[in-house]
Length: 286
Image (cartoon, rainbow, N blue to C red; front, side, top):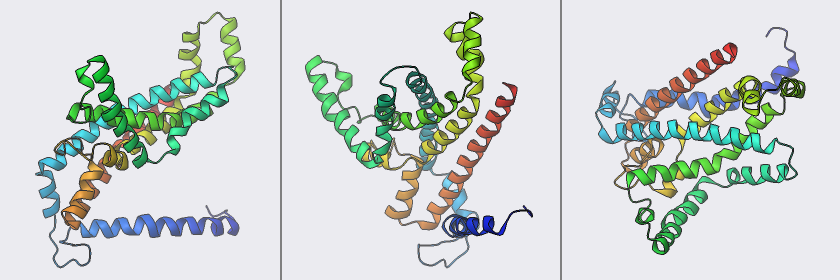
C-alpha cells in the first residue's frame, strides 16, 4: 500500500468518498437510530434493545424471513442450474449462439416492476384462459394462494436472472484450455466424464461468484414482489424487504423498521460470507 502512486489514490478517493457518504455513514446512523424512538425526523428517547426484542416476537416479520429463506434456497439452486445449462448451450459451435445469448440475456434488461405486471397478467389472465379451454382447474387463481404465489415469484425471478448468470458461466467456460478437452476426447472420455473431470472443476470459481450474486439478489428482492403479489394473500408471500418498507412507511415506525433492517443485513451478510468461504474452500479441494 505504501508503494502506491499519488495517481492511484487520486483516482480511488472519489470512490471511497462516495462509498462512505452513501453506504458507510448512513449505515452507522441507521444502527444508532435502531436503538431509539426515531420517527424519521427526530429521536427523543434511547430505547436500548427494545426494538430488537419486539421484532423477534412479531410473527409477521419472522414469517417473512422464513418465506424469504425458502425463496432464496430455491432460486439459488434453480438459477445456477439454468445459468450453467444455458452457458453450456451457447458455447457450443452452433450458428445461432450469439442470437441465443442475446435472447436469454434480454429479460434482465427489463425492470422488475414491469416484469411483475407482465407475469401477473400471464398468471391471472393467460393461465385462466388456458384453464377454461383445457379444464385444468389448478391454473385458475394462480396468485391467490401462498404456494402458487411462491412459485410465481420463483418463475419470474428465474426468467429474469438466468441470462445474467449465464454470462458469468460463459466467461469461465470460454477460458477452459481447448487442449484439455481434446486430450480427454482422445483418451475416450464421454461428454459427461469431460464435464465432471474438466469443465466442472475449472468453472468452480464461477459458482462462488454466481451463488453470492443470486443469494444477495434473492434476499433483497422487492419490486417483483410488490408488482406480482403485493405480499398477498394476507401477507403470506411478503418478503423481508417489503415487510421492512411497510413497517417504515405504512405503519410509520421508522426506528422499528431500522432495527429490522439491521437484523436483515446481519442475516444476509452471515449467509453470504459463509457461502463464499465454503465455496472458496471447495475450489481448492477441486
